Image (cartoon, rainbow, N blue to C red; front, side):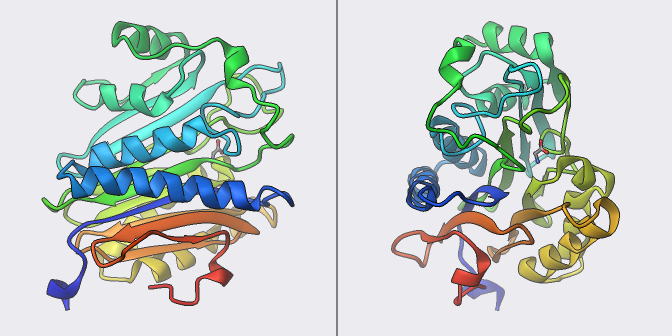
Length: 297
Ligand code: GLY
């Protein structure tokens, strides 16, 4: 029954990928830390947008994830990042792509939410970050010896529902190792890598960015949620389109929360580190793959 659903909820992920042996604990600890940080925002009365930004800033700070510090190197050995944030209250979008030299791309996206523009690229995104007095960083500091050598499909993301009933979704990524300079995946594109609408819920994706964009996967999941499908089922059905369109290697994962607080996640990648928490949980649940989550909603 709707009145039994949690009044606030938060889910985060560390990317659809194969987690290297030895990195399991760092992935678990990282998503837990992000969920704890986002939970504090929500229980202190903060907004879903605040919680998503806060959780993703944690993930961007940890080199085990391909976002912010630890981002993948492109074919020229550079780091070009993308991030997106969507506010379900008014469906405003802030997103940046091929941005260089900022510590927290998600915060640049956040500052764009009230502006007319929804997506800034490259130098324009960097200039906006500088105007907003956000933290700039030498590219060398974004590189990390602790990051896995091959970062693949490793976007991070978060979705939150706050006590006021507002939904937000966010993504952040360093892209793909060895990709063409200027390549843009799904993560900053609303309807592809993320979407949020208070009337329905929110979703954030990770995975093969070109294929996710070709099938507008976030939009497909939202359509399923709108007609009442459970988030878990909506995601699982939508993800099955990836190999149909992109081939056997086109994998991904997604997290979602409905407007009434139902949480769901699924993936067809080998691993997908996830943590979620809502008002009836004492601490976040943390998993590296769906097969570990026997109590999945
Ligand atoms: N899903 C992240 C990317 O393809 O860039």
